Length: 363
Ligand code: MG
Ligand code: ZN
Image (tube, rainbow, N blue to C red):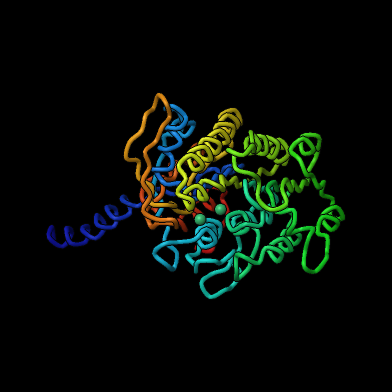
């Protein structure tokens, strides 16, 4: 009898051991009200440390204690930002160039669309055209990331409360001569062309189209625009009693990597980190906000071969002018942040955000 009992118990222990090694989930725990997802495009650990060096040994990111890793591959070993964004926004590994569609081209619902459906306010911020791959993959469903005007059309199909970035031409100077800003105004949006205009808006929705296509580099005078955009978006979104979902992209870290330009890359990283500081200050005071900071992929195969934390100088080496396949970090702060630690697929970020919001999903 004893031996029989042992045999019965053994599989039970095996199950416990296996499930014990999986990341914890938040099922059955009180849902979090707000999520702010911050994506540093092309931001691997080298890019972060380049920013740390450039900023003389300081980053707001260091305030976050929960850290994990994300495996960024798409249906290819090396992802692009369309597939990388779509993995995080929908939980689907798809082909490079896809925007909010799965590997067969079928539209798949995004975390932003789920949040809208559940009555939350939603927002997107980028330092590039708001129609570019990363923000687009949260709100649009297109087979090809370069169909910017079709992506702009998709903004009109949603009830997004705040979006701030470039891409004005994709709304106004179009092949079909349609002025989408008029349609946005018909829907009740304030269409703003400067951050000062946005500061004067008392109540959303707001379309902030701050540049014809992309905003300038930080090195070429973008100033504090990203952090100001984040503060204004939070001010407008936080009034929704149901909570909000906001995605903030540091878009041009990636472009510094593509250009193999360490000054471009590092200053974009520091600028993104300033926005992270503003978000953490809000989340600390608010107490009902989960903050996730991650990347879609690394860009440039950056190595830091030398540097100086006093002068901020960096001796950089790049292995590529394109994206690479390495894992990227996931920093998480606030309620349910512990479920984002450990090794994970980029697609897990979607499912974990759904869990944290308490939304039933299609896992
Ligand atoms: Mg991007
Ligand atoms: Zn890129």
